[in-house]
Structure formats: structure tokens, C-alpha cells
Amino acid sequence: MKSNEPSFAGGEGPILQVEGLVLERGEKRVLDDLTLEFWPGQVHAVVGPNGAGKTTLAATIMGLSDYTAFQGDIRFDGESLRNLSIDQRAGRGITLAWQEPARFEGLTVRSFVGAGARDRSEARLRDALQRVGLDPEEYLGRAVDRTLSGGERKRIELASILAMEPRLVLMDEPDSGIDVEALNRIFDAIRHLKDRGVTVLLITHSLAVLRQADHAFLLCAGKLWKKGSIEKIETFFGDSCVPCGHRNEPDRSERDADLK
Amino acid sequence: MGKQDLIEALYGSLGESCVTDPEVAHVEIHGNEVLGLHLVSGLEVEADSRPEGIEVEIRVRAGARIEKPVRICFGLMPESGMQRISMRTRVAEEARVAILASCTFPNALDVLHEMEADIEIGTGAEYLYLERHVHGPEGGVRVIPKATVNLGEGARFRTDFELLRGRAGDIDIDYGATCGAHSVLELAARISARGDDRIRIHEKAELAGEAARGVLTTNIAVREQATAEIKNTMIASAAYARGHVDCKEIIRDQAVAHAIPIVEVRHPQAHVTHEAAIGSVDSKQLETLMSRGLDEDQATDLIIEGLLSPAYRSQG
Image (cartoon, rainbow over all chains, first blue to last red; front, side, top):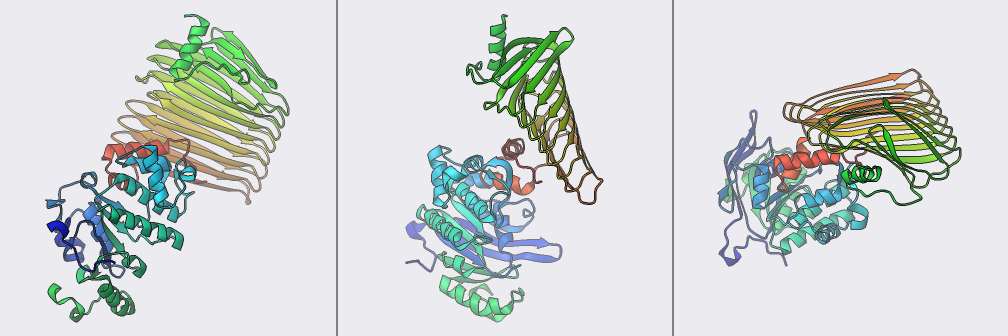
């Protein structure tokens, strides 16, 4: 049974804190004074219409090159990430699964999955692939190139993340461009991460993905609009966001009272 | 050093042992001297050592299938010297052969390796020539391979030039190929250069016969003050000819890279594409690897390793 509200088991505070985050693109505020907290070992979902700022939030937490000029702060285990490079953030245990994973012409799955693996043994690499439903015999020697489908690359990327053994995984649209079978494997991997105490942040506008989470945030027009149980966010998203046509023009009266 | 010691030194520099399998044909050439020669049925090799260089003639009889790749080991162990090879290769109709040629100059400070090849591949024949180089750490080697290749109807030829270890030095490749009807040509080179290394690759292929196909693939990584100049020319002059030119160059530091793809189509039913990309590594690839914990240099090295890997596939 999933808990619907954040757990502070053991008295732990949030693992990740986003504090008053503002990121602008020209005149537009893509992230507008966002304040969020994520709890260790929980699966969180950030939902919202296209253009709400979900991917920007993940990219900013990871510190990607076009997402470093922000106001506010992002803290991981209480430490500000502001001046940390991508690899330094990864060194703290943060990683990102891209919506469309990169291709690496000529680089084998073995090299790619092993690149960031904590344990680069053959057994560990094979286990990581098996956990995402890929046969190591078939895939370890293949290149991460155009001969792989988007779904295969997505699963291989997730295998590389499992092998890395991170503490926080940002997953941008994990259902994008994949079939039902592959999606089920990705859901299995999300549960595996949670079982190992890893914090997961799902970026999505899919209700199926949202339902994998313990707790959700809803963004609209760069602002945090609602937070709470999956049922609450799913109901609002279905009743208000979808009919709205994702115009990113929220009705202020519908924002959670404590966020106004 | 005796001949056998030199043979062992040549293979040793490649991290290999001498060839002992009697079913594997092999030739060992040190400087301008033939040290060893072992043949198998269907394959004829004549080598004539002269002070100014070596003349080698390789013939594969019509219909012969040489099952195991032929090993040719070229090299020079001293720090300085010259190796000049004139090689004439004839692969007769319906024959098939693969040659793994190792070129090793592990101690080079002032070494010249010149190769002039004249290759004829008969109707329906197949010839694979893999050229693997091991150079010394100082870059004191000049490598100047030139080849003229003629492919008969339905023939296939693939060559792959790769620098396995050491500094590139000065590499100047000049290949030209003419492709008959329904033949298939693949020329590939994968080289990493640094310091004051200089790479120059000029390849020209003419798809002269109907439905001939050709791919020229060049993957280069240059860093520090190294330079690379790649000029790939593909001419399609017959109906249904299909060609592709693919040049990828990754540059770092103060390195300079030039790519000049030339595509010429002389028949309305022929089709040639080209793709050239020069620049630093792809930012999404870089950031993906950095998000797994690799620093920028480690991530760049891994991306370059992929680019220079045999597993790299041309987009054509």
C-alpha cells in the first residue's frame, strides 16, 4: 500500500530542497519561485502540462549547461548545489535519465553501462541489464547507436543508472517513446530503486507514470500549483489540466491555499 | 639480432606471439627485408628485397577461398630508418581473402614507412584489408600509404586503417578507387592525434559501374596542436550508383581540423550523400556521462573511444 503523504521515518529531513527557484529565459520566467521538498527513499512525481517547467526543473537540479543561471537555491543533503558541476552532483549521488537518451556511436553497451558503475564486474553489468528486461548476451556487445530503438536506449540508460547506484534519480518522461512491455520494465526498475532506498523524481504528464509515485507536485506556468497524494493530483490533473488544453494559464482560485 | 628474434620483437610490440597455426598464411617484413613467409593453398606471394625497398606481389587464385585471415607484419624496430613497399595485389574472379596487416614502429624517432599499392579485384571477388598501426610515444614516424584500387563487377573491397597505440606522427593517406557494376567499396580510417601530429587523408572513389556502392568513413580525434585535413571525393557516374561520405572530427585544445567532402553525380539515377561534422564532443553525450560521475576529460575520452572504435557505424 502506497503512502500518500511524505514520510519522515527515522526523523530524516528532506534529501532535496528547492528553495525559491527562479529561472528565466529572456522575459519569461520558466521556473517561478518554486519551493519543493523531496524525501529520502520516496518516489515523487512532478506533473503538469507541456511548458509547465518540469524538464527545466530536472535539468536545473542536475546542473546541465544551460540551466545554471538561477535564483534561489537547490540543496542536497543540506549542501547547496549552486557551484557544483554535473559530475560533482553525480558524485553526491544525483543522476538524470533523459527523455530522449543520447546515442553513442561506436560505444558498446558494456562500456556505457560500466562507465559510471560503482561495481564494474561482469555480474553487476549483467544484473543491471536483466533488471530492465534486456538479455546481456544480446546487448552487452552492441553499440549504443542508431541500431537500437528509442525504447532500448531508454532501458540501457536506466541500466547504467542502476549500475551507478545513485541516491537520487531524476527521470524525465520515462514513458516517452516506448511500448507497454518496456514501460512495465521501467516501472519494475523504479520499484527496485525504491526498495533500495533510492529517491526517485518522475517528470511526467502521464497518469500511468504518476501512479508509480508516493507523492506528487503539480506545476503550471513555472509555479507549484498543487502538492499531495497521487489521488488528489490525478483528479485535478484529469479534471482541470487536460480540459484546459495545457495552455499554462492557471485559474488562481484552484491553487492550493498554502501555496497562494 | 637474428631473423627469428626480429620476428618475435615485431609481434611482441603488438602484444602478440608469432603465428604458429599452419593454416594461417603470414609474411613478416622488417625494414626492407623479408624475414618470414608462409603460404596456404590458393595464395601466392612473391617478395623481392632491394636496398631501395621491397616489391611484393600477392595473388589469390580464381575461386580460392582463403579461410583464415592472412597476417602481414610490417615494421621497423630501430629508432630511425626507412621502409618502402611496393605491393601489387591481384584477387582473381570469385576468390575471397582477408588480410590483417600490422604496421609497427614502436621506437620510432625518425622513421619513414611508405606503401604504394596497386590492387585489382576480379569479378565477384572479395578482399578485406585491415591495417592496424602501432607507433612509438614520440610521434617520430611518417606513414605514407598510397593505393589504387580497381573493383570488377560484383567485387567487394573493404579497408580499415586504425592507429591502435602511440602517437600518429605524420600520416598521409592517398587512396583512389574505381568501382565496376554492382561492386561494393568501403574505405574507413580511425585515428587519434595529439602534440604536433599531422593527419592528411585524401580518398577518391568513382562509382563507375551500374549499381556500384561506396562508403568513405573517416573518424578523427585531434587534440593539443595536432592538425587533420580530410578530403573525401565520391563520384557517381552510373545509373543506380549509391555513395556516402561520412567524416567526423572531434577537436580539443588548439587542434585544427579541415574536412572537404566532394560529391559529384554524373548520372540522374545515381545518388550520393555526405555528412561532415567537426567540433567538440556532443554536449548531450558529454552531460549524460558526466551525470554518471565521469569528469569532463573522462567523458570526452570515452566518447572519442566510441568514435574510433571498430563498432562505429557510418550513417550511410
